[in-house]
Amino acid sequence: MATTPAGEVIYEVEARLDPTVVAEFDAWLPGHVREVIACEGFTGAEMQVPVGEDAGGEVLRRTQYRVASLAALQRYFEQDAPRLRADGAARFGDQVRFSRRILGPTSVPLSVTEPPATCRNCGARVPGRFCAECGQSRDIHVLSMHEVLGDVTHSLLHLDSRVWRTLKALVLKPGLLTNEFIAGRHQLFLPPFRLYLVISVLFFTLSALLPGDDSAQQDATGEIVVAGGLPAAAGGGAAASRGQSAGACEVDLGGTWFEFLEARLEDACTRIKADRGKHLRELFLASVPKLMFLFLPLIAAVAKLFYWKPRRLYAEHLVVFLHTHALVFLWLAAYAVLAALATCVPRFGGWITTGGGLMLMYVPWYVFRAMRVVYGEGRTRTTLKFMAISTLYFVLLGVTLFAGLVYSVLSQ
Image (cartoon, rainbow, N blue to C red; front, top):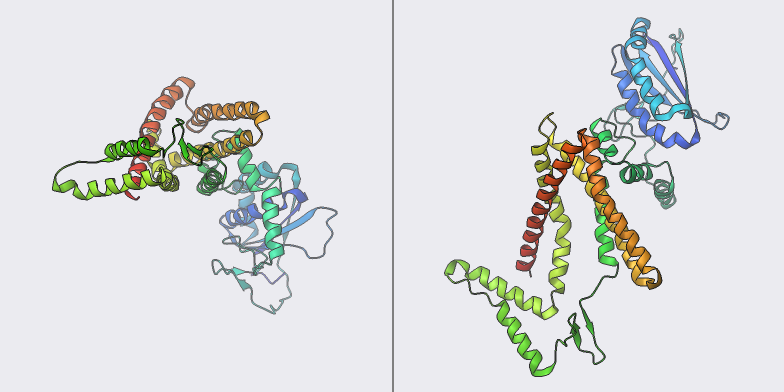
């Protein structure tokens, strides 16, 4: 330990961790240390990890705080310590055992052989293993493929990881993730926007990859048969049908103002008939994720109109819909997998379809429950607002998707 200025003391906190909470504790500790050194009288801190020390199956973490005086430390014990200690106790319980001691300054100056490293993330000095400003590890290097695979495997399969903890809370505890985020507790769960983005990408990827119903198929002669069962190309009758279809797609808006639009629509009709709308469907499906990014802020603004007292920030309503839409897309992704299984295994198709239907029925209750948990209102008021917001939701969603469809038609 280096020499401390006259009157300064070292407040040392040692934590012995159950191995199952090491990753969570290491993610939480830098933020906790920043809160402690923000208290009056603290001048700095150093987080330490013993090397080559056997802690009897436990993992050891030690933090040394520099405090201007013993009086300042006593003031911390009386005013701030109970609140800060309660946070750690609530998170880790008996999985972490803390011990504390106070050290006085040494009388023998010790020379520092090398200056502390500099954090590559924020530029602050890092005397220990982790930066006290941003929490980044001092040991930064280009990861090998083995380390990358190990990190991915740990993140996905470790049952105590943020991913599984977040998914469990998302599915089983409506409104919990939103309340935790609004309360400022961000370390235990994935951020709402990242969660929504990952799950929505998963859903749209599965929608593109999994087999779906095809409205046209080929008959024994190789001709394309539409869902109604009539051949799409059958001599003169088919030609007449194509002529009628062409007439149905004719657009006569009149006037010079609409000439450009008329030309685009006629061209789009020609392309739709040529490939039976396949390209249009691809364009529209590709635009849906972008449309949802536009739709979410709109419906969050609608919710703000219904919950204006007590006053809430617009971002809080947006987080509510990010989490509920993440649940919806997760459920739809699971339903898409079940539907694909029903197609591949017809024997169990009925059971699988029933299970998927029950999953989708869970969504309305989930949204209702999340509204009650987040906004804290009674059943009657929540029911009325749920019905009103749901009505406006589907109206705005329909308008948004229709605008996307028109854009896709004109982009043919």
